[in-house]
Length: 149
Image (cartoon, rainbow, N blue to C red; front, top):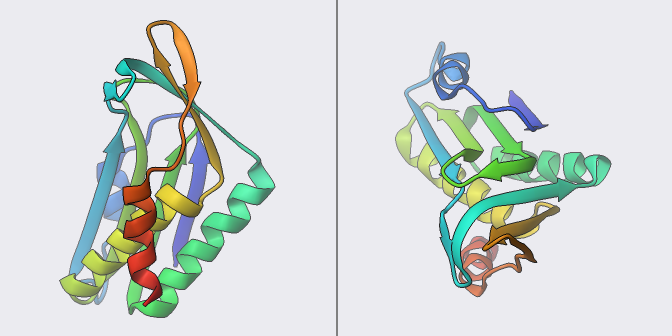
């Protein structure tokens, strides 16, 4: 079972984890990403995320399906926020349920690596009252590439 959402409103981490708990689940691994307040350009006050809904939905579904093919998962939740988000606000959540912790940890890491590099979101950082488009980092691309081998 996978639940995938793109939304502007905040999410409830505890409720999302509770929804994954159940029969046979021995581990739930979560990751919550926050809007950082620093970048190479200086102090970030906010970010703004845009997306094309049909393209984003297809991409996120493919990423989730690949994780479910690679690991024996009992549940998966991906939530990515869009819109204007202030520094410190939650921006992304990944939660993975499995019988065993190793599969849950690996799947969560895989999902985040692919969300950072292959999910079609366009991000602007607000620094000093100016918006700047954010490019993918080479370290994020290298992290995602490790899953190809």
